[in-house]
Length: 405
Image 1 (cartoon, helix red, strand yellow):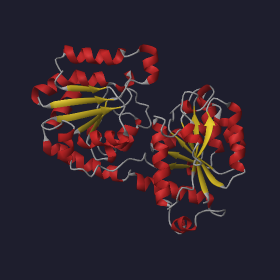
Image 2: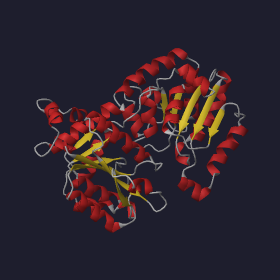
Image 3: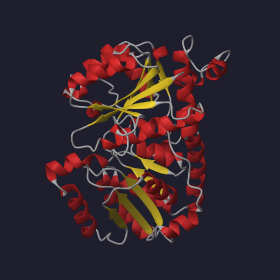
Image 4: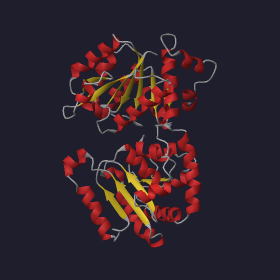
């Protein structure tokens, strides 16, 4: 392959898709020993500082709300030495209703297209159905990060299963810093630490865990529940800090001030990994069962931390064989019982840590980057594909495809 072009948001923008793409580009580059050859067609809004993109030849900036720019960008790609285009699709990052402007890019593009769908519906409705159908039809390959998503796509859009590839959401490795020292540095020494991270909004279900804490604290008084992250900017526009204030009032009313710590600020990725590595139990009590992908869950499993979660789509898929860790949303008694059992039993936590660690090893970025590289090389074979990558594919089952079937 000569060049790979990624279509996505990208840091310094604070966005989960941006961070994902940064790691994907870096891991694919490392796997193929590709030194600064690939580029990012980077989406930006008027509120973004796009100077960092315009001053770096690695980036081809694309104004998200300028519809005509999408066709122009596709024509630029067509005239370039780009071998394959990798589209990170999330409805909210492109212009138009449900991000429909990206269709102009897809229609004009004449290069091989790989699309990763970050949101997939079991029963897509307008306007999302039309947009996702056209992108799926135009794509030479589709990457999903949840095995259940394969059947969703084949049923909803009448796609051949051979077009869809499962590759897990990439994750970091645990920090090399000794965990005891890390816990001391973060003030976790002598505590049993539960951790939830992400932009704060009512869809996190945090109140259900707080409701279960009084019974947990009676048996395990050293319990500490750390809730980290700023309020989601769209939520803040609509209702300010109402949800955070409701949680704080709930904490006071239940007498949990010494057992719950809310951290209202932006976390760098390095800091997030430190907190994940140092905690005893990661918690995702989401009420929405349709969530197909959770980056924070992927990260927690990647660093080998035990997880307690509601059974939403990504949790059910990633934690296959660990169904004891999946609890119904809002079932306070079940959450209290399982939290008490885990936090009071160090041996049980260590056993779960070992099981989760083995799952997490399959999701580390170097392995995920290699899987993506093999897929890209397969699409480019016969044209200008990387010869070494093609040799790896010849005579063997594509490891990406074999996982998705």
